[in-house]
Image (cartoon, rainbow over all chains, first blue to last red):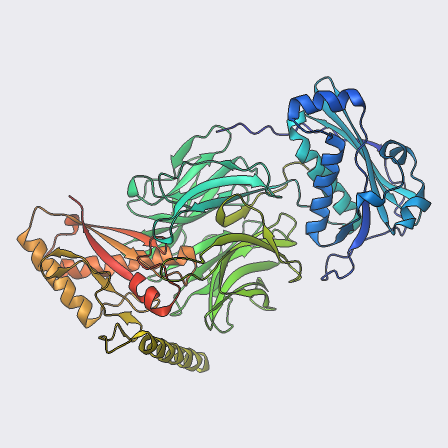
Length: 449
Length: 160
């Protein structure tokens, strides 16, 4: 297990926007048909820094590469249209000091990002500025330092700040995805836990594939993962410390435990425990190991997910005869069915804002990812496919990631499992790059704030 | 009430479509391989001993044992009574047309339906353990109703 280096961030606000003028802004509440044209200038750098960083990181031009990370993030958000660098007229170092706005307006840029990156005392020192080209004004300026090997995260942090300044909402770029990497024939799939940056880079495998692993989920601080492992052919919920690699089984249950998630304060794990053919929902306190039974019903109760304030739990039950979505208080009282549309409903997961529940729906042989309000009203189906399930929210509640499988013939040919993302608006559906086939994605919270 | 009617209708439509598609997959006078949407063929079946099939099949989303399944399980119980030193694991499986977590629970429910039936025929519960694989270990890789029917199964496996 490789240690993750968490950023030691020191933001120095050296120029606060003095007043919010009616500068450019981006509306993220609708499908965006006119993404904002934005120019991301390569970050300028001195030749000494470039040479030693190339040696250290094997990255030829660090400033250019960071700007590419930013561009790619902005493009995949669907809200921005990063312009081709070949058309840029002004040099990066001069643009960062004082852009010639006419030059940038000429290529139709409405916003401009400039920056500077240096190696100082073995640390990466980064400055960047966001400019409103049409108003001819600086909108934001920030500087921070980090260890050189975190250089891609520099790009993600810049994107988060720009996104927040222009949309008014927190970004979701300095984040990771934990998922299940899949290989091999359908009848004997080999599955490993894998973790990667949100943009598909820096993939690391956390298990070897010797036993089946499923449904990994982060804790709120992204240091721990809870998941299902078939270690020694005993399917149980496990806890993994990502940094140390230490794994332990959660609780001492005389049967299968599955469908785990953390409580929003990270102190409990909520999961299903199956006994004598009946699955109910339990919690275990990670500090005092106290186990509590939350549901007690002869039907299948599974896929529990807490509301962000921890007061409610949404879950999946077939107590009505078919899979439906329910909401109850965190002590198991006041159980209410909330899904009443046609079809079967599963995998409810509460949005980080608390107002919506995302779900998987099966209707007439098609699978949908959708959202509904927490009272079950206002159902909206975002995407339809042959098979897809298990949505997970971006930390700002604007994007859902899920996995999709394709049809296969009797030899298993044509089968694939891939991660996809879609905006809450139902627009901007995208394949998420993974090194292997992938399923069961879970989105981390923001790594830096 | 209205809702139940809707369900009933979709359920009937589902059965009908499955029956139709099952018919479509039968060629050249083969014996029918599905009844409703329960697999009745022998393609994937292995034998614990001569005349003792190792598996039973289920309808979509169901854990109810069919007449044929109960017949198979009585044979398994008789074989277990004769071979009192053998313990078994009952594996419960689901098809790929359901969410992963629900299918884990469904597989467990199916395996326990089998265990309970074996117990009513005098097999001690400590000789039978259960494990659910949900939809993780299909026997047929296909994405069609016949393949799914083969995958909705419980398999009794020797544990020692």
